Length: 229
Image (cartoon, rainbow, N blue to C red; front, side):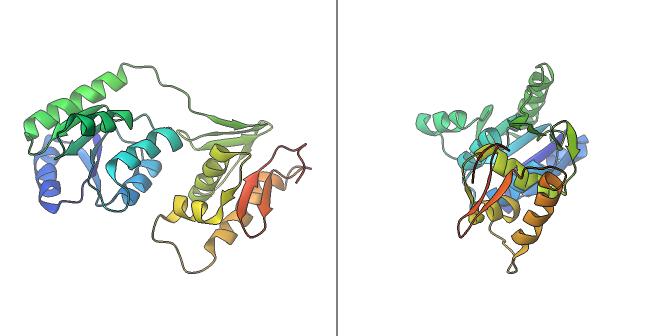
């Protein structure tokens, strides 16, 4: 299995690596919620192990973003010291598939992860393709097209396109786009301007009508070709 572990406690993380890697599992890890979100958006995993008490973006918020914003259906097992019924309900409501209370048995964790992966493999994949007019984007395959013609972008370009399409035709503030690409580690320079220019060249240059609009002093939005400013 390829497993993403989002856990900020170094001892727990070390124990997970020490137990799971010798079993042949391939592990990636993040120590905060935003780093976990970035890894989950960039890579394909069989299962995600997610702590609730994370810095920056907690596990509940991270799981919600995985499900609602990124449309990632990868099974999620939450690790947490919070054992009240309300905590469990919040975890499942956010999109988690299983819940394990700290301290936990590593053997039980491994068994639960395998069960989640088997269950996911037995389900038909659900298409989460985004569409806005003649523009479409599949977050799972990173394939975009307009009027049936491929739109080829960089990794950052696909993140920007996904964020804009999820909100379309609403305005997406600059800060939201920067957060989607860089999290809390935003560059000092106006890097967003460069990436937006590249997105506009790929998305609009071959066509008569532009879909990507700048809203001065606020952000950016996608509009349908027959829509006004």
